Amino acid sequence: MSRNLKAMIGPSILNSDLSRLYEESQKLLDNGADYLHLDVMDGHFVPNLTLGHPVVKCLRNKIKDVFFETHMMVSKPEQWIVPMADAGVNQYTFHIEPVDNVEEVCRKIKENGMKVGLAIKPGTPVAEVDKYISISDMVLIMTVEPGFGGQKFMQDQMTKVKYLRDQYPLLNIEVDGGVGPSTISCCAEAGANMIVSGTAVIGAADQAATIRTLRDTVQQAINKR
Ligand code: DX5
Ligand code: ZN
Image (cartoon, rainbow, N blue to C red; front, top):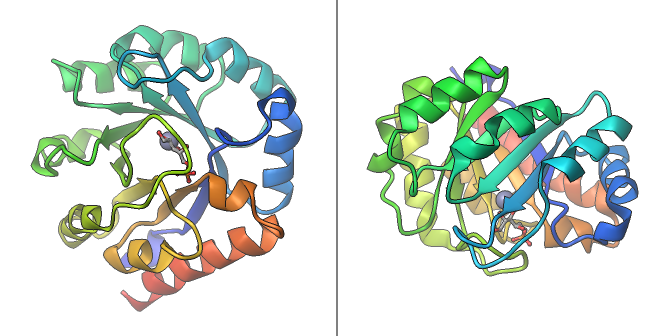
């Protein structure tokens, strides 16, 4: 059943040295990252600012064949679909909380050639996203309040991951926030297969070993299922 599900590690570059965005990203890829998770914040949906499509485009010019996911922590996700597609983004993951017409945003993302990721904050019930599974490629269950790296993993969010995995054996389920070697087992057992990790990977003495540990733990759980 879960034969087609793959463990993938997508480091978040948020807490890296952003003056060296390309070098830091390339290092993560050289150390085994499967994709890059790029955190986009607008200062409205979350109380923080990060980077936007011009920066993503520059990074894409230097890194050609890697899957880019943008995690859109923004109040108006529909506004950035075209610029992000133009910047070379592969998957546009947005929060459904501020959106009136989720179907419409999903449709536009697909029209622009990107995959659709649907994200929910810790306080949002999983039922809110469950109704859109058939029109999405991935669901992101946040395991911290979005806005900042380096926060504590919220284990209670695993009930949402478990629920989704039970319903949808082949759905790509991503977790993001406070995920690292000490919290990966919970995520793997609950059924997450796409793993975002910021501080734990960026700050690791041995990045490659950390990424390998995360992926192996998740893949083993998938293989047991
Ligand atoms: C939080 C971001 C995360 C975060 C991950 O708003 O979406 O991607 O930076 O960083 P860590 O792993 O440090 O929580
Ligand atoms: Zn993120």
